[in-house]
Every structure is written in structure tokens, then in C-alpha cells.
Amino acid sequence: MVAGGGGNRGGRGGVMTDLDPKDIPPGAVILSDDLYSPIAWLIRLITHRRQHVVGSYSHGMIAGRVGHVISQGALLREQKIDRWLRRCRLKVWVPVTPAGALDWMALDEMFRAATRRLAKRWWKRMYDPLGILGQWLGARWLQSPWADYCTEMTGEVAWVADSRIPIHESPAGLNAWFKQHGDRWMELGVIEPE
Image (tube, rainbow, N blue to C red; front, side, top):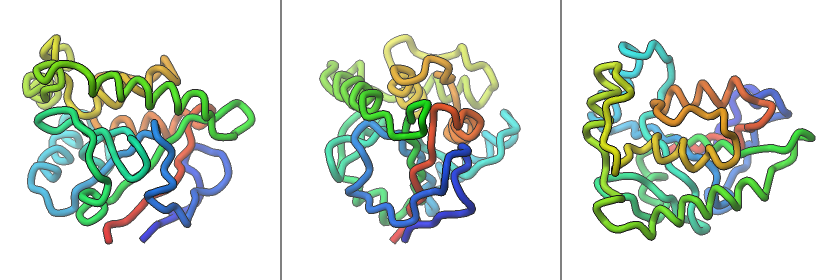
């Protein structure tokens, strides 16, 4: 099920209400909220308390090949989007040109940046528990130099399209940032769980 929800929060036109998951362009930013996970609930709680950011997203990832996502779990890997569609609300953000059209060149750069990360050695694709601890403590500088947490990877990939993007941000914080930067980002749609 796809929800439109009151127009594009970025300020350009309306949110696509007939978004098919297979139509998500490779390279797009996908924020998810697992509605059934206690870990997702804990991430939202800590984000609200520590960062004072209101939002319901608890994970960030990049659209991979059609029907796939590149997600930072214990290891960064590409997986079918179907797993996420069963349990999660997904919000899709894409870069746009000054005229408001999808920026296909930026999406391609983002997709290539994400796939280059998949080619790294396994230990350089590991999750960064120290970075999460830093987020929880409000010390964003506290993190492993060789590992990323989910929205850190997402932010670094999106940075190739927009160097203003915050790299060490929570999922809800990224969502808020995208909303504030409608000159460069557009909400493509929200997909509710099946």
C-alpha cells in the first residue's frame, strides 16, 4: 500500500501515490521503519530523547538493482526489497535538478558509490556498534574508522549528490534534513507494509 500524505514535504509537487517498489530508481535513499522490531522502537526512542528529532524512521539504505536494497546490517549487503515490504514503512527520497526533475546523473553516481562499498573486504563492510553508542550518548565523533552504521553509509552515498548532507545522522534526522532541502531532494513516495 502506498501513502501520499499531503504532498511533497520537500516543496515540489505531490508525492507519488502509485509507487511500485520495483519503480524505485537505483541509488535512491530509502528510510525504513520496522513496525514490529524492538530495536527499531529503541532507535526511535533514543533519537527522540537525545537528538530531539521527531520522526518514525529507524533505518537507512540505498536502492540497489531493481527490486533490491543495499542495507547495512551486520554486514553491508544487497538483498531483496521483499523482506522490507512485509514489515516496514518505506520512504523514498531522490535528488532533483533545479528544475525539479529527477537527477538521473546523481542517482547513477549514488548507485555506483553504494556498489563500490559492496566490493570492500568483509571487515570494512561491518556494522559500527561504536558509532551507534556515540549516537546514543550524543557524541557523534565516537565511531570506528573502518565501519559504518546504516545512515552513516546512506549519508556518505547521498553526499555524492549533495555535499551539504550530514554524514553522522539518525534516520529521523536524515528525513528532517531532506524535508528542509527541497531545492535538491524530493520525496518520491511512502510505501506502507503489505
